[in-house]
Image (cartoon, rainbow, N blue to C red):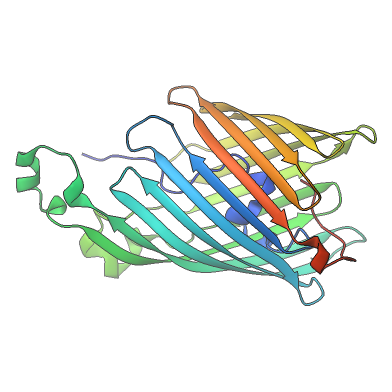
Length: 291
């Protein structure tokens, strides 16, 4: 019997912290930026995914280079846990007065832990299935790449945040039924900022996700910002859910965000986001940020 499920974390507020899906974005806000995201998916469902991520990125070398790192913890019930670390590096090339093209790479690892002996299964099944006779613990390498362009109104990026497919790695072949059999995921993200007047702006965006063995999925998002302080938004994730989002820019340095996902066939999901920027370290810098 074969089972299929979510293999990498899902994010609703990706447009505010795009380093999670594209290493070319690191340093793009023009100042050192610390971001935290906590997602509880399908709240109330036993074994539902829980994801926490903290990232820090900044521009260096006169903003010609962006660097960053990410720590993450991804859990499914009390049985599966993936805790890891990513480093990001990109080069930035001005292509017009306001446009910048970034090309980036990331590398890292995660500790893949599966407490298989803790699974609540029928005793007879455990006795005859050697796969559940012991636990699983391996260090898994990660690698990804991406490109990103933006000016002061528009952005577009393409990335593959995990390009190592372990079903094709010989060292893991003997235990291939136990580790995550992933496929390469591709992300295409784009957005635009329309200024209606000095107090109101509208920011639509789209994220298209594609991988082998799964249908293409798209997130269509629109947010309305009032005085660049309060942002209210809604999203439609194709064939999966509708979402509501609220953002609060408490100060030029601090932003809070919340997303509430309402899937069509599963329990709802909650996602919290926090970003702290250290603009005083770069008082005269020009930012590439749009969202």
